[in-house]
Image 1 (cartoon, rainbow, N blue to C red):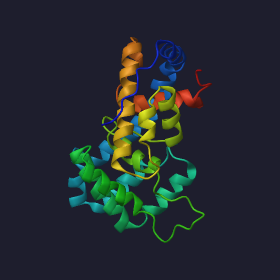
Image 2 (cartoon, rainbow, N blue to C red; image 1 turned 180 degrees about the vertical axis):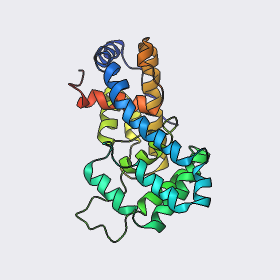
Image 3 (cartoon, rainbow, N blue to C red; image 1 turned 90 degrees about the horizontal axis):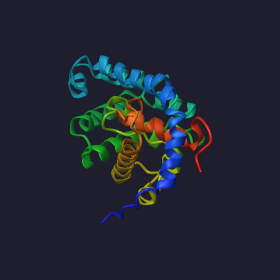
Length: 235
């Protein structure tokens, strides 16, 4: 049985709400939210009203190319991770395997086997071309960004240090204990639960419609702010 964390204290909630109120409006909707959702729109345009599974069956190279385009040119990944992903996707066979497993996840959602197969495909991106000194294309940020941009209504983005910092700030100790640096279904489920708890918290304490949580992009933006993304972390 999974232990639940106690509800966040009123004083802590007041501190966080006061802090977030100063940042979420303009930054959230004009900056952070926009560029991420533009990538999702690029994904939808590339699919052209079909599923990724359908695109793979008719144009496998096009499917891989779409993953490459959507997952480049934004700052969610460290530059070394971006370079690693770009290099890994040059191997068409491995990239196509990634696309196929991604398609199953998008069709089935949070299905344990589908996600574990997808994580295996991400791990398999690390070929012999990656030396010990190079960043491997197997990180949580890479694996989750691909899912996040493909469907931000369902799949959270995972930047481990920020995730753990904010979950700790919000009192979600039991979720942090379920975190593992290795790609796995149980950790991803725990992180989705953490996102949902933050959504519930925001919806409870904010009444301004401009700060309404739309999807995982909204919550990811909120997660980025308290650890110092735009200023000092509230005490």
